[in-house]
Length: 169
Image (cartoon, rainbow, N blue to C red; front, side):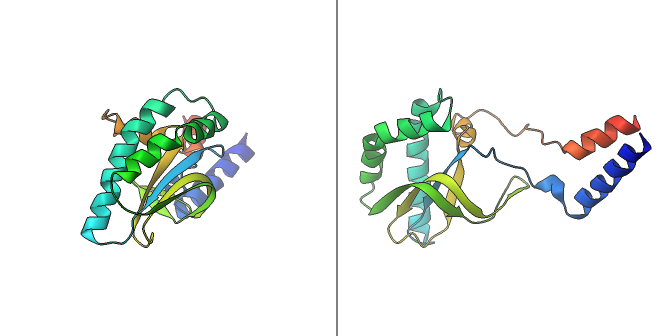
């Protein structure tokens, strides 16, 4: 029992030292959604956010009952015309890429998400040289926020902290 406590304590200290509590994993079978703006001009960034809002409202209805990444991918393929018609309203060239795409490091609400290549649905607007917006499409984490519900009360927990708390109480 003492070994477990010492191991837990060492892990807790290492985790605190390396700030593990701020890194949370997105499920491995997730599908990310990313929109890259043409540039960082105010107009291009505003356009990116307008497109994001328009697409979220359509995508939420389509994906709210999706049970797997495969089902999500199929829904996206079957409804590409809906997505393209939304994008066409903005009169800006775009490309859509579904596959393994690179994502830079992102910090959101105090949580750091590591850079890397992830299965994703990426819309590149114009030259795609501006800041991007991204979220998790499956499971529908970003789409939940688009409903307008208050998800600020989500509580993140550290697995190691929970173990230490149980062992010391």
